[in-house]
Length: 148
Length: 148
DNA sequence: TATTGTTATACTCTATAACTATA
DNA sequence: TATAGTTATAGAGTATAACAATA
Image 1 (cartoon, rainbow over the protein chains, first blue to last red):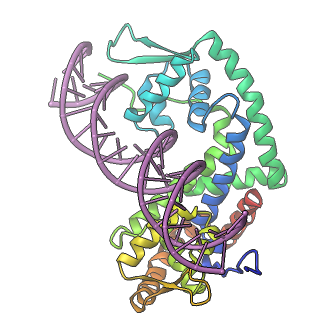
Image 2: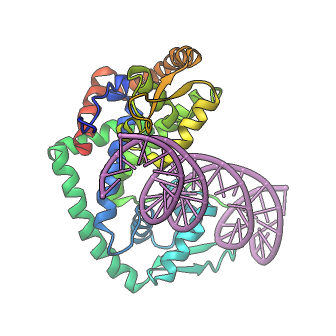
């Protein structure tokens, strides 16, 4: 049979456990992000990499990786993917032949502009859910204390 | 050579992107959680499962899984692990032979009590970082809006 | 027919070690 | 010796399909 649809659950301290609630919220936000960028096939990490390169052209691979908390070994495949889509270009430094400096291609610049429009629509949805820009600012202020 | 230690990075909108900041903060909290429970070898999912079973003995596997947003296929291995450590017990329901009802073992009850002490120390650190219980309440209130 | 638990499998993300080429 | 990028690999976490037992 199964008369009840959902069991009534006592979540105990989980209801306001910082880690648990943060995790569930982050997954919900990334879910919306994923749906927003499904057509472009852009993952959160790709977005952040394109954004950083756009605003910091010429950085070393390892600098971008470190800025985003990505290990340089795992960063290689991300750049490979973006380079394969002709969005990002690796240029060997003249002064230090070990380093790869990263730049957006012309297509990458164009892609970044469109990407930001899609992102803004996503972010605006999140801000609306939060209850406005002030609530967003308050949230950022609070979560930053956990990261610092 | 290498005169600069860290490149100065323009993070653009990433500085207050809800998803990005939430993700970084969640990782920081889980990092502290992991260090707190390194000795017990308890992952966040294990913690939440033990907690739910403690406060809702006799729930079906699928009910606990759904309550925690874990797919029932992936939940099997989690319960296997906890059962293998003699913390959780599966009991076949008398009324519906398909379902496995979940209970803590006596050792599991004892483990849960100790677990909560470790967790409270962890959570208190997070609350302190946030600036007190009121700030924590405000954070929970805000992130819940993203999940609902 | 539908549900519960299970197995198998694949894909992403992350972590570590070791290699190469350069400095 | 040390650093930047790379390769290989292994471990989590997560998603989907299909199966057996039972309803």
